[in-house]
Amino acid sequence: MTSTAETPTETLPPQPPALLPPWHTPEREALQLQARRFAMDEVLPVANELDPQKGEIPQRILERLAELGYFGITVPAEDGGLGLGVFEYCMVSEELARAWMSTASILARSQGLGTALADADRRRDLLRRSARGEWIGAIALSEPDAGSDLAGVSTRAVLDGDEWVVSGRKRWCGNAKAADFIQVLVRERDPEPGESRSTGLLNLLLEKPRGEFPEGLTGSPIDKIGYHGFLTWDLAFDGVRIPRGNVIDEAAASDEEGAEARRAGFAQAQLFLNTARVHTAARAVGLARAALEDSIRYLQEREQFGHPIGDFQALRFAVAEMAAQVEQSRAFYRQVAHLLDLGVPCEKEAAMVKLEATEMSVRVTNQAMQLHGGNGYTTERQVERHWRDARLTTIFEGTSEIQKRIVSDRLLPRSPLA
Ligand SMILES: Cc1cc2nc3c(=O)[nH]c(=O)nc-3n(C[C@H](O)[C@H](O)[C@H](O)COP(=O)(O)OP(=O)(O)OC[C@H]3O[C@@H](n4cnc5c(N)ncnc54)[C@H](O)[C@@H]3O)c2cc1C
Image 1 (tube, helix red, strand yellow):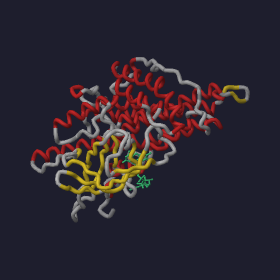
Image 2 (image 1 turned 60 degrees about the vertical axis):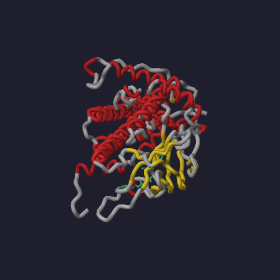
Image 3 (image 1 turned 120 degrees about the horizontal axis):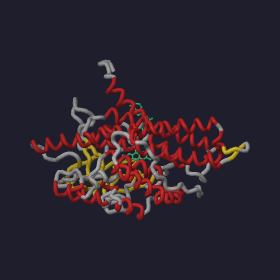
Image 4 (image 1 turned 180 degrees about the vertical axis):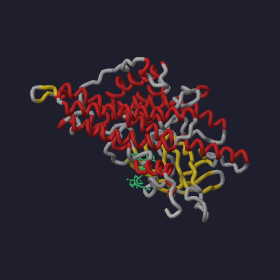
């Protein structure tokens, strides 16, 4: 059983104009309010009901996300999207994660994902479907023996006439069965001596019917401790056939035009990774905010020693520290999202904000559980869900250690001895 206490729809706190950040606009405030209302009124009750059952995001929530245009926030308006930026994408995702992290995550399976094909007509058609919520995917990068070290991917793709034939194992593929497509990272050839270990890797687009696995692909769901809302799969590819033209991010051609497209594909991959990190930071902020808001309500409700426990200074100070950390991480992710929208290269900052915001989320949700006392350690309250989901954010999309590696490598070049 989860708590029956409903969190009322909140309005944005009034801010004097002098305190508004430089990126504030009335349009963004309206979008945030819309997302907040939807999250609190429509998503939160579903999360409270389905998360304990390890259920999946229901069709009606997917339809509402599509109606609101959230699957295509970053898709250009001429392709049917909202034509907005990483900033708005992350802002909406914070609101959704406040209610149920997986609804924020499903947005990352659209936004034009799985559309970067060399064929311009197909690309445009898929982009339009993506914006409408009719092209929701899954990403199969990780393998049983290749997680942080993706250059170690061993799933093979061999050309046979006009098709790739794919065989190997993938692990942790979220949404694989429910998806319209799976983006699969495969090895086409081994690197030659002197080439980097990632040479020979490419992403293939596997189109499939929703709710089914195509011929040659089998899967079994992994029993996770949180992040319910969609299933996460172990996948076995046994001779799965994919059309030769379904190469994502890289043009298959080897002429000058192809080389140009490959460069564009690499830049796009960098933008994708940086955006994913900031998006994870925004989700982590949403979870921490949920824990903070639930804690404030609980401190007013719960009485001990003849007082609401919110009168005890130790707990009041804990709330102040939690709130300050949430604000700090929010300001940081918005700054990096703003830089990404301006086209500023910010790989280091994206890794920093992913690291900081996710670690903050673990601390704040943990503190929230403490503030709830024994009730926090039950499934009667939502705080345990926020804590379980926050715990994942330091692991997926690159662990905290990998983010530290990225940041330190940018700040401190290794010596030739390393
Ligand atoms: C619920 C869930 C959903 C996921 N969804 C997806 C998905 O949809 N698609 C997908 O492709 N993947 C997905 N992942 C996989 C996720 O990205 C990986 O779990 C993550 O990258 C870590 O890889 P690993 O689990 O193999 O850990 P490992 O790489 O084995 O790491 C184990 C430990 O070693 C540390 N470590 C590793 N290398 C270094 C190093 N060089 N320096 C310092 N420390 C290091 C790590 O930080 C970690 O603490 C998901 C994972 C989970 C748990």
